[in-house]
Length: 233
Image (cartoon, rainbow, N blue to C red; front, side, top):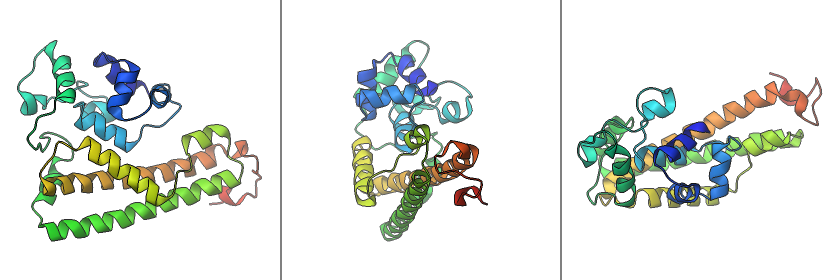
């Protein structure tokens, strides 16, 4: 994806340096930059939270690549010093808990933070259930796609992941690594809720995309016929 490469080049980082910061392999980063792999919600979250990339720029191509609210976090920036400050912030995050003022999820986090821990725990439990359902639905659809002889480019774009237990374990590990500077446990729960919601949305979007791909590229499937079950709607 061009934006991933644009961020790396704006920060003047080598692929191996950027891959380490994103907690992925260099080969996977290369696949992201060339469009052979899709950017996951986890990576987008790291770009926004750790590298201070502007969501407005990332999602809508508006404004500057770096978040204009950066000054609220590390002091006012200007001109050519901006990129260095971004890099310094990545390697030396502040010790205090940060609510990430100015980010698109601020209102959600603020809303959740006003709830007692008991309610937050219930919301987390519900989110985990929804995440498991979204993961299961995605996995089932991928299996259907593969059973009809999905072409390689669709198999690569929509891979069949591990079981939910391993999937969630990896998700929680990545979340913990990218939020290890937050010591307020309640605030951490709020960020986790938002992260779960984002992941659920991502899985549901992947389901919708795969359905569209199965319809759009139906004749690429080895098991395709006009009477194929998945082609009926």
